[in-house]
Amino acid sequence: MKRRHKRIAFIVAGLTGLGIAAALALNAFQDNLVFFFSPSQIAAKQAPTGRTFRVGGLVQEGTVKRETDGLTVKFSVTDTAQSIPVVYKGILPDLFKEGKGCVAQGKIGADGVFYADQVLAKHDENYMPPEAGQAIDSAKAAKTVVDN
Amino acid sequence: MGGYAFYVWGSYLATLILMGGEVVVLLRRRKLSDQQKRSTSVVQGKVITNETTS
Amino acid sequence: MNWYKYASPTNFYPLAGKMIPWFAIPSAILFVLGLYVGFFVAPTDFQQGDAYRIIFIHVPSAWMGMFLYLLMAFYAAIGWAFNARLSSMMASAISITGAMFTALSLVTGSLWGKPTWGTYWVWDARLTSTLILLFLYIGFISLQASIDDRSRADRAGAVLAIVGVINVPIIYFSVQWWNTLHQGASIRLLGKPTIAPPMMAAMLIILAACWLYSIAVVLVRLRQIIVEREQTAAWAAEARA
Image (tube, rainbow over all chains, first blue to last red):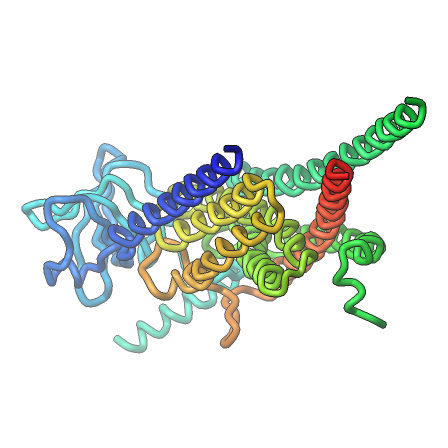
């Protein structure tokens, strides 16, 4: 009797573990295999309409504007090909900056504006001292001047 | 820590708790089984003496 | 030297005991050195300020979680295939340390995510697959604990460990295969690292410390498992007699 109990416990434990793993995997891979859509995908109507999804890309330079209430922020997210205007009311993460990556979660309105209820900063894998960072920024700035 | 003290120290505190905790649990497990070994050998000794007397 | 001799748990036991200090002491020294370099030598980051200093423990613990899983599955497989008891015991000894490091990487990662991304947790592919790794470890540990018959417990654990190996490359490549919030790898097998040298030094020293820590702790636990199993075997033999 005890042996059978053990075996049943074993099967139940195994199936529960497998079930949780499969559920998590499905949850992750169905909705979040594409964790976010790019502005180009949204322009091509590949993003879901009417339900919450995420848009990811770079915060377009010179587009971040704060409303007078001090909380509402308007900016554009771009993947350099397409861009989408975003409206967000709330506190932005410290690393949210123009020209840097971000992921906004929300719904797209009939007016084509993305109404975000959460904005996350997506930082890159580069780690360096501030002086080196400044050097790279100024080199980039010099390059854009030359390009123009 | 430039306003990030909670997160940075929190991380290293978590490290201390998890790694230190693992070591403490492991050493306690060793102590416990040492004690058990000693007590069982005493019990076994008694069993043997009982058997020889009966 | 007859290496085969040490495949027997009773012969391995005293050897393991002698080896432990050789890993434990350098591990402690490297931890202190790594933290010194990490907090006093490495500069602040140009984007993240001091928040990035979590990387020194986050990345090594995440790597350890993955490496130890592969190692655990390898030993479990050897133990199963060749009926090598010591190898199966090694897998059991590794599992708890691997689970600890995986949990540590999740905790430190979430403490890093809040100030940088703006959230403690997101269900992106990297984070989700790492959580699954923790569940695989927990599944392995509880599966072994729930079966009384040691050889059956070892076999069942081996099956679970081997099936779960598929998750490790998924974790590693998730940031390349899919859109994730988690950033890509800063240190790659090929190509230049995208992390400044003193920062990388601190991370690698702590990685070495974590390896030595793991070896020391696993050996202590392995000795413990040998004692406990031999005791049970002795009691069982006595009960039958």
